[in-house]
Amino acid sequence: MSVVNQMKLSVSAISGNESFVRSAAAAFCVSKNPSLETVNDIKTAVSEAATNVIVHAYDEPEKNFIYVEAELFDDYVCIIVKDDGRGIANLEEAMQPMYTSKPENERSGMGFTFMQTFMDELSVESEEGKGTTVKMKKYITKAEDL
Amino acid sequence: MTAYKEFSGGKLIFYITGEIDESNISLVREEFDNGLALLPNAVILDLRQMTFIDSTGIGMIISRYNKLKKIGVPLYARGLSAQTEKVFKTAGLLNIIGII
Ligand SMILES: Nc1ncnc2c1ncn2[C@@H]1O[C@H](COP(=O)(O)OP(=O)(O)OP(=O)(O)O)[C@@H](O)[C@H]1O
Ligand SMILES: [Mg+2]
Image (cartoon, rainbow over all chains, first blue to last red; front, top):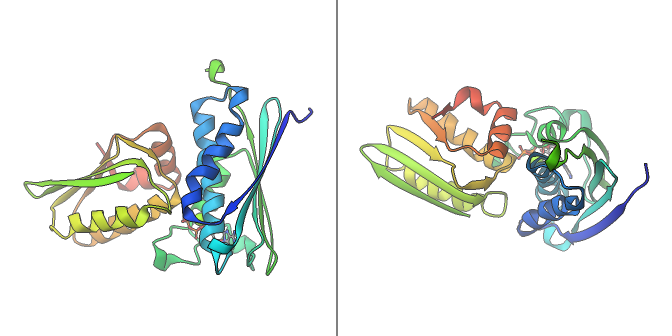
């Protein structure tokens, strides 16, 4: 199936941009008439990926970027959230439910679990010192199908 | 986002409205902890007007839940939207917090 729309977005890796990033990703799909649940699933998963960039990727997040790329197809969307920050040394450990490197920040280590649960496919690539790329795919349930 | 509380008869009702995330979680924490400093004997999270939560908010709630559990104070939540309920469920919170 061929791609019908594409988006690229780079914004400062500051927490004030989280709501913008998740809303932009959800709004990008609006032409496909997604159900409210699909919209909320996309918002939640993208919020997790963006929060991770802001909280974990950079020593000086305000001087660095969150990069979002999305491709919209007829019945699904692919969304990439990436950074060029520190990367993740042990990805398998990082993706375990409840694993967090920042328990002192009252983090629960649920971010990757949410991305996995709320989207249909998730893949993560990371290289120490280079950055992290999170790719997600979501089938779009149409509002009128309900 | 706004966070505010009502305290009467030993019961703390803590209201969150709008979207909570990393950009405003410290305000929510502070306000919640001000409420807990009143030493309530029960805490109710009123989430009827909360329109978004992710793991950042979940971490805040779980850590308060653990503190309250230690001192034997029950935590309840009410007014969960579909998104909030799915997030709570995925985090296992539906099993430990009373939904009223
Ligand atoms: N973009 C990233 N750059 C560097 N490290 C990351 C990145 N994303 C995740 N991590 C690492 O993976 C761990 C797990 O991420 P996850 O989102 O599951 O939990 P968390 O962010 O620690 O807590 P929560 O998401 O529940 O607030 C993080 O603690 C962090 O060490
Ligand atoms: Mg996270």
